[in-house]
Length: 410
Length: 151
Image 1 (cartoon, each protein chain N blue to C red):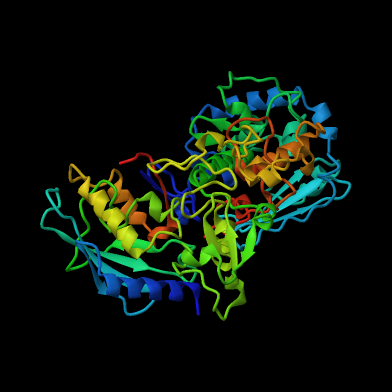
Image 2 (cartoon, each protein chain N blue to C red):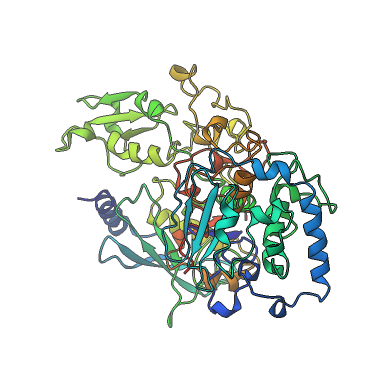
């Protein structure tokens, strides 16, 4: 017995939420997102400098293709506005690549990142305290102006995570064979207890949401409800002996509400007033009396297991023809479709990772995965079990990922 | 008239006409939003001699939507010490959640909870009780329980 709370997902083990409020801005655990001026405050080992320089040299060896690949998507000049004051993010593009400005970061400053584009480096030189941009960082070779404390440790870490979070072999990673012995899961941006990109976070969230939705009743479809046999009550009808199990009233012909003269009989032969049973079927496609399944229901625990259990399928990719045997002779050619069995449409996402090998856009979508619905929000369709029904219904509120960049921080 | 009102009127009339099952008493049903009933487990059980108070809250779509049911915990009443009852009175019972059916009623919920208590062999609070109670919403219907076992 584990309590899970909606609408905020709670961890079933510790019951904590996944979005943490920062009570004290000084104590921001996301420290690597800040831009620091130097190494002094970062607590990095003293020889980190040399390590970073070495890494930089490593990256610079593979840069030329990367610098040219600015995806069409990234240069369209999407405007990506977060709704809240906490994270206003503006992206602008044009022929010169994509500029992203993040306003209202925890330290009050705004940050600019420019991906791709030829002229971007020159422009940024005007601002004195600007850290090197990721594109510059990856493009190299370092000009004279790049020497010195060009990239601070935290920023370096951020760039590294962005790169590591990318999937090798997919777009943008051609230059980087798996290195540093990446452990299992790193290619998805998941590495032990940490996630490095929005997609990996999405996966975890949808996993949680899927679990918390397991066992929820599946509503009957319009089609199923329309085909139910209806009968208008008349004098002498045997139904007049019986009760509607929902309102507990006996069926009767003298009623002021004409709708109550209509009796719907479910395939299991249980009769109900039409206005009584229809709202229920919209919530759960089962008979209230015997739990006969008009549409396949998820597995349920506990006693009183519903009939026709063998026909249920609670996992996507399970039997798609899971219509209960003998259910609805009239509609057997068109089995009731439950929402979770709809296949995810692979063409619906414009950011198909395996499509263009655009380093900048791929990197971008890693950094700002679910910024703006539909522009970067994408799940992998590789058939892993980590995404279930959440991936299928794009209009459901579950697509709103709590704590995403679109949410106000406080 | 709201569907819930009509149905609750009917339930109330039946309660008054036919009486309540043994061990269950109507404490208050002054409106059609909130009722209180007392619950006692009869026979040789770990709860012998204890009386509990159940609070039912109905929304306008009852009985299509389940009532919010919890044990009252205040100066006068305590929740039973049971592996499915949190110390704040919230109850983890599938019939109050995923397995609710509009055929169920206030009395049938009481009888089910009575039998849940009666079958309890050992007084134990739920695992993770403290954490749940700390974060629990006011309305237990906002909690989605995972029903792991059949007990």
